[in-house]
Length: 232
Image 1 (spheres, rainbow, N blue to C red):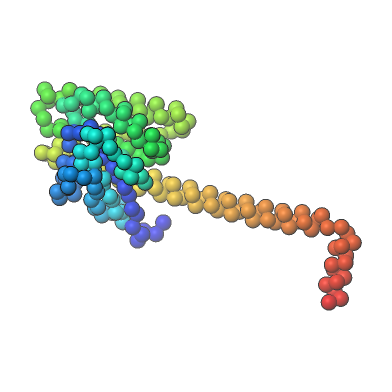
Image 2 (cartoon, one colour; image 1 turned 30 degrees about the vertical axis):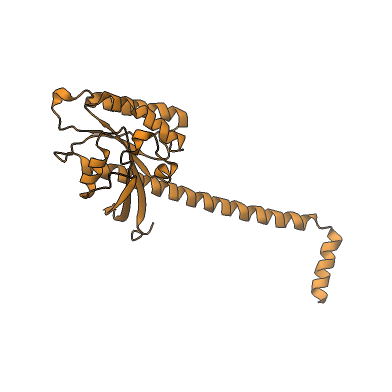
């Protein structure tokens, strides 16, 4: 792939209302986002010497009304699944958000995702979800969908983030962007190989058809054609 070509990636953040998705995006982009509508911001950087343009999409509270449209999910290349370490309901809702993604066709073997536990800066006694619980969820999700697709899936990475202390925010985004980038390259190469194989197969079929047509011509017709050619 041409290293000068800009690779476009769409990364979406999903999770219950109030877990800090918008705040995470604001910190990553270091700008304010519109708090009233679903929208996105773009950031450009380099991954493995390739220029990448990343659109990060935010629900901006629309998830409260269960009104996320298909356009929000459409053509996404990676998913940041968020919960708050002080909110057990947001953790329990992770399965529902995964089901929502799958409903729109984004299976784990097609689109990578990471798990983010936000508000890690809170006092430890306020944490109701610890690291082990989150990591166990990641392992379970991998095994669950690995059986369904009958192939090895990558590990689901868990990040604990803090808006106040700027903990792991850039690392989380770079991680999912790298996974999305590598997955997109893999898909592009797979499509290219399939196209090459199809073209080769079509060429072979055309050659076989020509040979079959020739073999099906009666001998006297072949001779007539040759004589006609020679006399002309």
